[in-house]
Length: 445
View 1 (cartoon, helix red, strand yellow):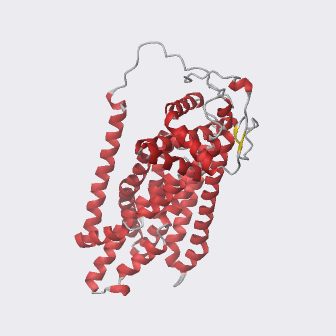
View 2 (spheres, one colour; view 1 turned 120 degrees about the horizontal axis):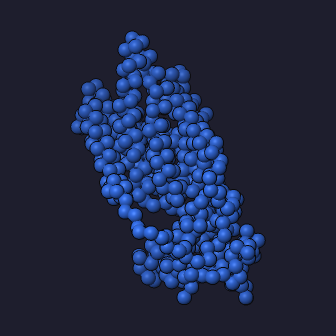
View 3 (cartoon, one colour; view 1 turned 120 degrees about the vertical axis):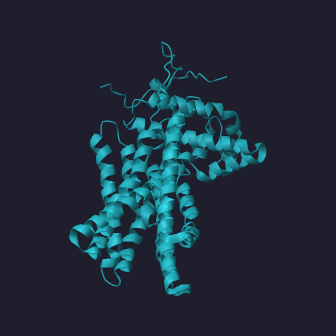
């Protein structure tokens, strides 16, 4: 098997074109065919789950459940998008994740859970025990596996967008948000149907109680479970290609933890009158706080990685001296985008945002290479990112320079550029043998 260098050299020139005639893929291998097949699959799943939920809740219950279940969705998606601001992934990944959770995973769960519960009830002649076993054992395994499939698919087929823990958290959280959305429609719709039969209304109704528990108290429940799986995949993404045990064992461990916490949550109703509140206060809230701290800390570490890994590209002529500081500060990045949007329009603001995202991905890529975790596609990916930066430099650099002048914590120093107190020497893995002095820049004009 071919081996890859632990710290690939700086690209000195564009790769030579491959010899031979170009190969045309078969029609089923074309990108648009795969996208179309995926869209059709999710759309059919959505139509089927829509019909099943409406059959169980009735039209009125479905509409009430839909109206109430949608309330926490924008807040949860916005929260996960905020976590992903350092190196934002493409929107298509989030759309796929939410659609998979709301359609495919929900369909798998409702069919598998119903079948398993009925089979257990028939086999044991104990419908009550079958419901309890289904909720505490079957449902966590089925639902977490179905949600984890979305994370696995993006991990395998969108590897360049899946670079660390935050990416795993965001993908898993948005998938679980979509799943919880569909599940809440079902629960709230059934609760409304029960109230219609009993005539209960107002704060004492089953609908109000269900809304309080599922939407007010625990909108983060499903995302919290699945985020454990996402963290496992995120750590695996940081592992080298030869660390097979880590790349397989960590996602499986995260999935098992997600199933365990989900089972504990579902089983809380069997722990007595106050079992739900005991589990909520003892496990759910602390786990939510701990995971929130972990993700925020990881986000800050990502910004530090950007500041530490980009200076060699300054020395090589790809970036200006101000850019590592600006790209390593969320405030400075926002100032740069606002400056570009105010002076050059929305297209310039978008170009600056893309420049920031590509530069961040470049820093993460170099960080993995310096730590000996680069895969064989390192050089190709580095060249792609450098090219994307270079074609946007004319628009992005004035905005980044402005952001540096207005947000820099220290004044300018003569001779080098901006002195920001972050150690902009060449002690961050810079090697003249790798980068050259002066370097050849294929895009220099």
